[in-house]
Length: 118
Image (cartoon, rainbow, N blue to C red; front, side):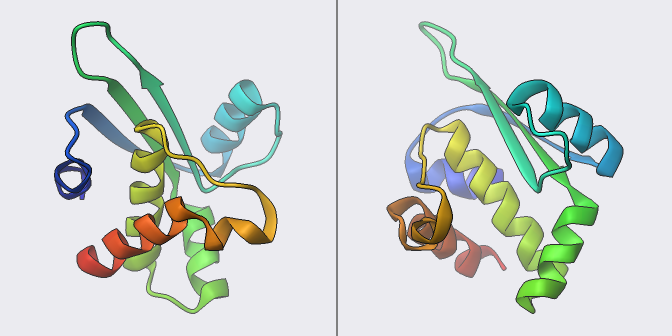
């Protein structure tokens, strides 16, 4: 997944993907965003002058599983969606909050990758 997105974006980066449970994701989310609850995905990037970025993508399996049920999609597809979403954020893409989120350019780009990878 990571290689496919980086190739599609014509970017180079070192990306790690880590899967966390509810407690560890809640702590990470509280520490870095101030939201004391687990979230589905978080991404962090360290830009290195003269080199390509380092990125960490954290995915919460239990949150992903609940979202898959809610949206009526296979868990595999939801995991792909979250990993792709995190990578796109790490590469500098963003989206608005609220209902416009799923109509944003980033979301459309994400869903093209999900369709190709799922």
